[in-house]
Amino acid sequence: MISREEIDNLANLARLELDDTQKESLTKDLESILGYFEQLKEVEGLDKVEAANHVAPNVIREDKIINESNQKLVEAAPKHNGQYVRVKKIL
Figure 1 (cartoon, rainbow, N blue to C red):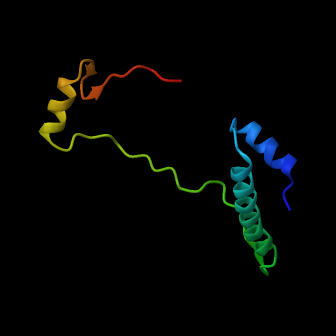
Figure 2: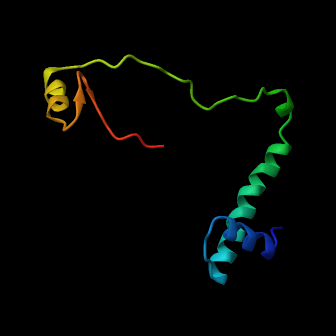
């Protein structure tokens, strides 16, 4: 069972302000989710399954212009470099 202190700590870490009703609902939801993980412990042969390094493969494709209307859109952009739209760097 998840304690009230654990719910308060999770809410604090997530920067959430929860009332008592929301905390009760969250407790039930988390206990339900954790119950599914307990069921996984009962599955035979699970220890033989290799862990995945990532969910989806990295697919790299070449950027190419499909039709002329795309090129017109690029040229209409305030800043562009050839076939690419220049945008502000976001870190």
